[in-house]
Amino acid sequence: ATIVCSLSFAQSTLVGLALATVDNSSAGFTGGEVTYRLYAELNGGLITFIFADESNPLEISTSSTFVDNQYGDNIQGFINSAFFGFVPSLAYDTWLTIGDSYSDAAQTTPGLDLSGLSGSSLSLGGTVNSDAAIFRTPDDPLCLPDANGYVLLGQFTTTGELSGFINLMGQDASGNEWTESNIPIPSVEVLGCTDSTAYNYDSSANTDDGSC
Image (cartoon, rainbow, N blue to C red; front, side, top):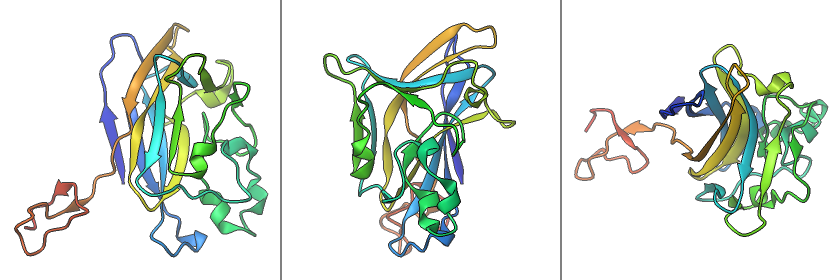
């Protein structure tokens, strides 16, 4: 399932963020873990930065904890995909990126602390001298959207519900830079009966499917 949180910006090529679920049945998880991929949807242009600073904090959280594989990494490009056959769950590790690549890692600012992805919440920025970023130079083809207009930003495996907000920088087709802040992470649609008085009420549903 894919949900797009549509936003309207005057000079940005960002349409919004999209959250998709990934089939992780090959991982051998037994606790109800769900793997999500977060994308930026673009109307042309490219993405160069996921960032945080004193005025623009970033937060990616789960209501439980993130799955953190001992053989993985917090940046996709530093994970060795050759080990997926030996450790199937490694393919569903939690990480950030700009563009989908296990061989070409996005760059990071010195000292970037992504240890929150091993717990329940990644929080960056919001204090003095807290600038942090994951980035690529605009000549890197991984900054460009795929055929469907999406740029992969991260993968998150958890038994909980994702929430938070991120900040992005990019360029339009003419090379003009844009910045968007406090972009909310969308929710995946869960269909079911949302009427708490109905016999078939589903507490996990966030969209009523008319079955009440």
